Length: 320
Image (cartoon, rainbow, N blue to C red; front, side):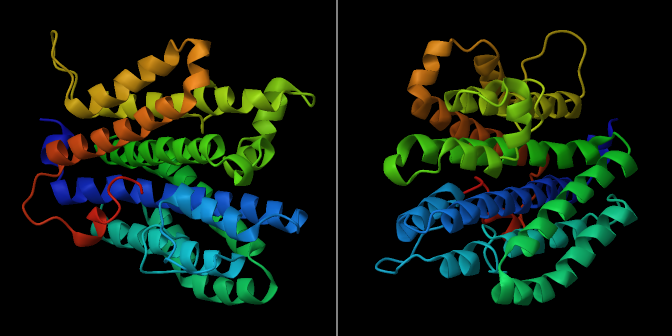
């Protein structure tokens, strides 16, 4: 009997969403920081349009007829504790998931998440007075510390795999959203340097392609680079590995379960992608987001099949 057989489905689900929510807080902080720097450096840019593109990336709607400003963006996408699409909402949900799985996550992981949550109010007040950079930087650093501790203090068992699976699927979805807004939003879309910074990929991209690199190479890098841990291909490979190990590796040929099939098809698609298909990037990004949704649903149906799902774990199930 594997640990997946013995692990309570509620704990497995909490670990999966713990990985997703911490990754979501990290990605949202990176995206907000990159966008805010861009707007501050270009005071003539259309603030309302740029802020609406931020909402589009993160799947959070803007009330009809309401002007979208930097202040409203921070209130809705950073400081709102009730929305799982905001930084504080994601960290709140992550903390609740960690409480449910407290016997599985390490003490250092819990302490990092708990202390981060308790510092948010003070950091939020400072951000409203002096700007959000320190707040967003703290969130990024604590997310990196959390996942570093997961790697160094958790056994490589199914508990760790659920955390990493959640992180990987969330990373794929967020990167696909960023690229989709860049491709589809035309005039008010972020430029490639801003998008690379929002993905935490600016320095890695420069090292890979040099100072005189062609910005058009940013999309292939974020999608296809095998060595960069935040690329879509790398995250899909990690998710597929976790799903294969969770499946138990039965002897003989066995049809992969639906979640692994959804992820594996997209991983293979990118692995052998014809460069000409990058000219049809919107369709490919749409496929990626659908695959993440299918994988999330399939994982829930296989590993979390109890009758009373936790309400806050379902609110944002498609990473929207």
